[in-house]
Image 1 (cartoon, rainbow, N blue to C red):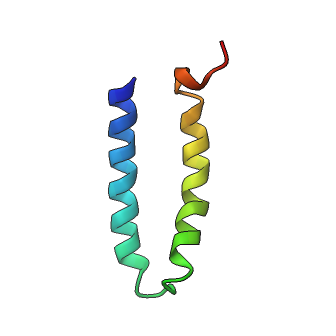
Image 2 (cartoon, helix red, strand yellow):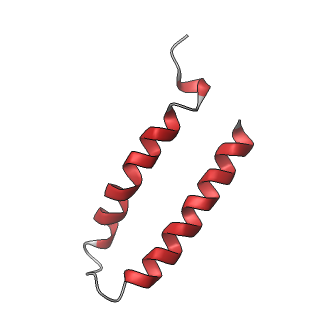
Length: 57
């Protein structure tokens, strides 16, 4: 499970960095972190359902 989560995290990091470089010319540097967090939050919450160590036992 850890391996799958690490691969998914690496994929999201790669996508985020490449997208950031593409759109960084048009967006203020003050707005970029807020936009990153707003886009990443649904993915983070969705992956928590697949992490069994977070489930109540």
